[in-house]
Length: 396
Image 1 (tube, rainbow, N blue to C red):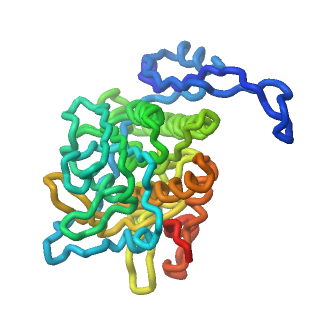
Image 2 (image 1 turned 120 degrees about the vertical axis):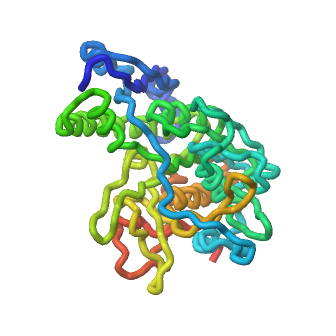
């Protein structure tokens, strides 16, 4: 790697807690529990980086890599005559049939921000933090669209929000005009956990080609060593998000449970080739989402959707809120991800009512297990669609 480079450092401090015996009666000693994880930025040379790696408090260390929103592959205006009363995505995940609506659940959206005064978000308590140098509100539209799919209220008689009972949303603006970085995303995840988010939705990914270009153009490297350096950084960032997901899961023991949901990416070009899921979705413990489209023989994987996903959702011709107060129909795994996040809020509400608490491992298991292959074409492959299309909790 290059010397004196910027890194994201994930460090933890341990505390000792009593451990129960096999019957849950009394204690039989003490165990270590990660009490606090710090996300830090550091400029390090080789010796300093190696010293940090040997420090047992260092959970992960990774070079800063550029993050970008997963750009929609198509956009189209929604005219008044084309507005459905129920979008096909909401119908396909069976949200309208469910007795659950995400009430009492806090959802976080890490994206380009939100247009908080859009009519789709009327009555929702919105907590915002800006991790960019831009203005606080959404000037791109991508974040507003994703938030609308998760919890948006009806606009002009059209329902596009999956979990319309969500009344508190945590919005982290992590992507500006120039994108963002793995540092800001990890910082935003930590902030969202601190704000009580139980579902964290991310329609973004690492910009690997952009990092290679940076090394070639700014560091004056040949493309071959630049690609090797970028691959090493890529692997380190997968480990970073895996360790961060492990930290998120450990918060169960503090009564703060959350799951991470992320888009798989739009880099595939079927039937010519498929690209594997990119970070943060590639991290172990992060739910990776693929995009589905409608077809004559049932739902099929979208041509652009990356593979090796956990679950799939509607991602083509998805209508939702857009900046300026209107609606827009766009396509991408970015649009599939908020469908899964909205359904996750509904399963979280169900678990909260049944158990009094939310267990993120159980929530992840129920969410992925809800997937069904029934509406999909018979040639659907598990690596493309995971367990199938996500389904809201419905009493059949």
